[in-house]
Image (tube, rainbow, N blue to C red; front, side, top):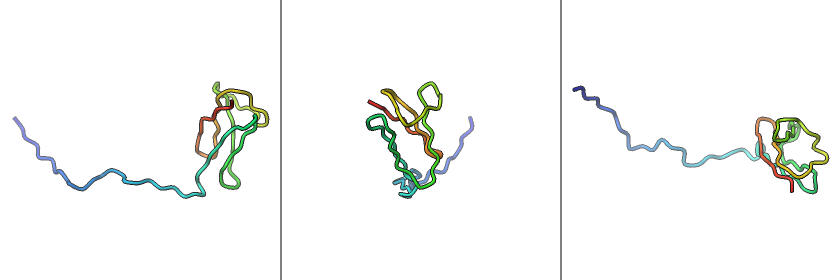
Length: 79
């Protein structure tokens, strides 16, 4: 029989709080078929249907869409 000694620390290793820079926060919603995005100036925005096809963001019908803003993807519902 072998015995292993593992050091145990009383210091927490979890993250207490995550913060983000407000300039990097993004949001998207669809109102009356039109996409409204909050993102830093110059952000790249693409809209995809649930089949992965890129769609025109001008007139979105009822359904669920994936909105990619820079490196963030959001799931948005058009009602």
